[in-house]
Structures are given as structure tokens and as C-alpha cells.
Length: 177
Image 1 (cartoon, rainbow, N blue to C red):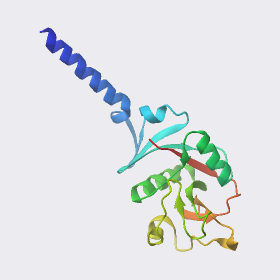
Image 2 (cartoon, one colour; image 1 turned 30 degrees about the vertical axis):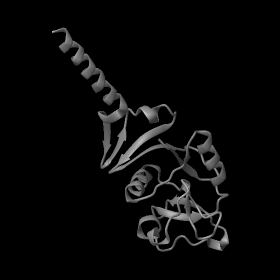
Image 3 (cartoon, rainbow, N blue to C red; image 1 turned 45 degrees about the horizontal axis):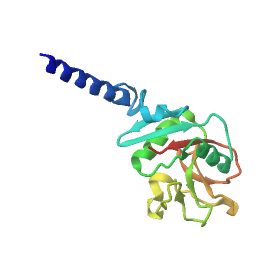
């Protein structure tokens, strides 16, 4: 009888670990689920685990505004990077959060090094064939007055837009797990 008791205790410990990792308690907001308990994400103050379809990200949403360079530096100081939203699920995750924030938000994409070649902050290049309709609307990117090299999620269209890097905006950091 004693060995069965030990097995039950081990199973209970495993179940507890799964619960603590955030796979049990979720708060639902339409198709967007915010994980309440996430071990990796909760160790980072201000970050929250966000899910959408197959996308899962640990994000920090700023309450203040900074230039692109300062936002990038703040994310780095938090052990993160400006958010990289590659693919339809991650873009849907970003735009679903946009309805909550309703403001321009710096993300981790720019063409600072080479005009017209947008590079995600994980080092990958955004292929021009993927610009429309997923990332940009038909008017963007446009490098207005040859002075727009940093990318924001734009309040006006809920799509990405290139803008002047020196403008202060809210921003989103991504903790890579």
C-alpha cells in the first residue's frame, strides 16, 4: 500500500508543476488568452504572457513614450528586445492588443541600415512579397521625406507604418524565452 501512496504524491507534484507553468488558469478575451500564471514570464516584472492561436509571447507594454532608440535601449535594459511580430498569428496577437492600447506603438522592425530593407530585431529580413496585406497597408511603407526608418503599429490603420525614429511613442518589448 505504501508504494501506491508515493506514486500518488509524485503524480500530484507533476500536476502542480503543470498548473504553475500556466497551462490551467487562463482569462479569455475573445480568441485572445492571457495566461495568468507563467513561470518564465512572471519572473520579469511588467511582462505578461499573451497567446493567440499558435503565437505565444512574453510582452511588456510601455506606459510612457520614448524615441525608437530609447525604446530599444529600455527593452534591452529589461533583458528583452522590441517586439518581433513575424507571421499572421503574431500580427493578429499584436492587433488584438491594439484595440486595448489604441495608440501608435514602436515594434522591433526598421530599415535604418538600408532603406527599403526592413529587418526584424531578431536579424531576419521582412521579404517585400510579405508586405501586403499582412503587415502594411497600401500607402506604407513610404519613407516620407526620406526620413522614416523605424516601424510602428499605426493607430490610424491598425497596420505597420514607417515613421521618423526621433518621435516619442509607446512601445512593446518581447522577452525571448
